[in-house]
Image 1 (cartoon, rainbow, N blue to C red):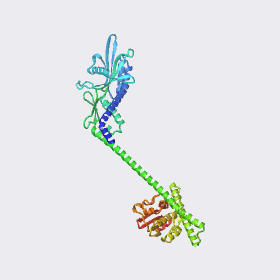
Image 2 (cartoon, rainbow, N blue to C red):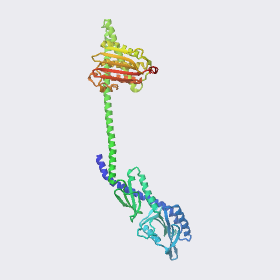
Image 3 (cartoon, rainbow, N blue to C red):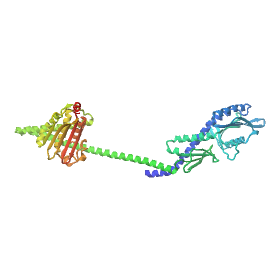
Image 4 (cartoon, rainbow, N blue to C red):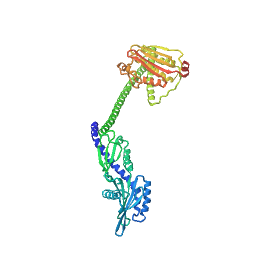
Length: 526
């Protein structure tokens, strides 16, 4: 639908462009009127206060005309025609200032003065335009066949009236220079419109040609590349002028095609942004759905994880309470089971609480120089019953005199405990675990390896995400919360260390922790 709309728009662009140009020409006419009204108000208005029939009129007009010529270089000639009534006789006079002031009686009127009378009468009959309640007439005289001495060009006329009777008592006027007409009146008005629409790149490509009734070019900024697609006459008072409009470096078909391509490009960009937004929305929705599913699985797994030790605690404590165990050896075993399950339950609760603090941004660590060998030994001591009871072979390779590292002892013990717990849970039939601690350059390395079911390569980058559990049936046979490795990663990164994994399915997994040594030890080893 958008494509069809743009295609229709391309077909309508020509008409719309022409309509816009017609509106622009109307504005240009208005600008030219205002410019002429300003010239007339400054040069012709004061003449209305001079009594042309008085004996002192010539002296006053000569002084005023000279001042106007000096102040207005756009005026080539300024003149006034008046009548003096003496009894039954009426005499006409012309006062003309071009290079000098001349007073001419009617009997001495030359063809140029007679032409001025004719132009004034023709302009008065055809049109007028207003400024401050005064009437100014505009006429453009073009006569290629006229004698060489005839004055051609643009004239402004101002009708004069007798102050008492109100009858017409002559007129005043000015002849405007050709440079003013082309460079100021026409070009200045066009430039204002073009600058107003400067954001439209097509405005600077428009070719204007203004000519008069004799086909004489008054103004042209450039020739049209193809042809003038719009030729129209101005309204009054410029009805003798014709505007021809084209395009400089293109044509109307190319302009319409460019407009179509621009609009199509914008539409395509909007569609791309829309599709990206839809894709991001679907991705976010899918992520939220997977997160919700992970949380649901987390609640289910944690419930099972909590229920198992609680059931064992309840069972063995009830047996001991009822006195059904007479053997001291059995009692000691049951006590060890209760203690082991209590520690297991406490570890799960600590994991959940730590995760809650991390999510809320309230998890704080207390760092101090500590011995990682002691931390590892303490963790292994806590798992001794489970290791022996499950038949695991645990091999340790902890180098003596390990340098101290800056750690939060409880947090680091929890990280080692989680890794060891995973190694036990996912070992499968080969129950062999190795724990190694040594220095590698400026870092302390701790490795926990098993010979268990392993982790697929595609899943290894995701196992440290919260709630994530490998989507393998063998893994889901073992219950878990999906929080252990994400907690380990957060703890190690809080210690400015790194954790990595190497694993192959069916061959086991090796987790390596690298912790920076205390500064003095790192400097010594460097």
